[in-house]
Length: 264
Image (cartoon, rainbow, N blue to C red; front, side, top):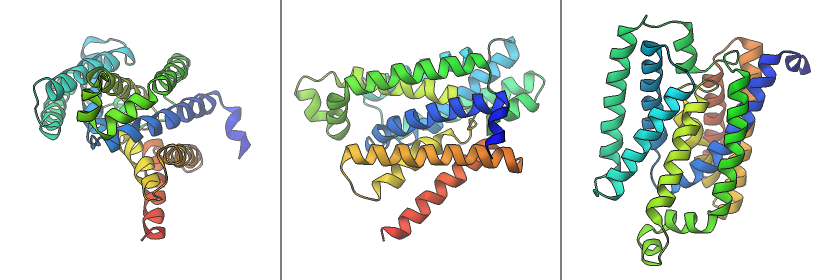
């Protein structure tokens, strides 16, 4: 089994996968508790629009999806918080609109190809050295930001109205959360795939919540489930020639189903 680490592309895939599995579990913990579980799916389709723009303009496949996802995340949070629009309605509008525009742009470009397929479903061979450096650096910065604002962010997550009344900058904390989620989704599409990244952010924390532990233990369990799913999924992808994203998500789903039966 250890021979898979002889290949540089597997080393890159594991470094990125482990980094993102930790970050998605932590971000997902706050997102799910805020009942904002559709956010990662909406952001992933918006990132697909970024990929479409990159294909048409022959721009960077890394930076364009990040920029597009971040702009959309800021717009979503502004409409939700400042304009008091319903979260699910906003996310549905952005998701469907971004997907429609992405399809048009893909049609204008060369259409579906191997590169686009790797964005949709994930590929262990698609991760570059540049993406490794960006992902590891971003993960460290994000975890430090989340750790530094942990108490205020948790308060705002559990009771937004009371947190705002207490003088906590709820809008800026929520904005930080959605922007970090947007960049994470854009970075994770190489390993997990645009169509499956939402599941990686939601399934581990949903599984951990079934055990009804305190928040710190729940995040720890979510990280454990996420790490195990990603590592096992990458190994399955290598040995069985399967899509890395589908393998990771199916294993995460397996953990959820088993935990559901154990906690009936």
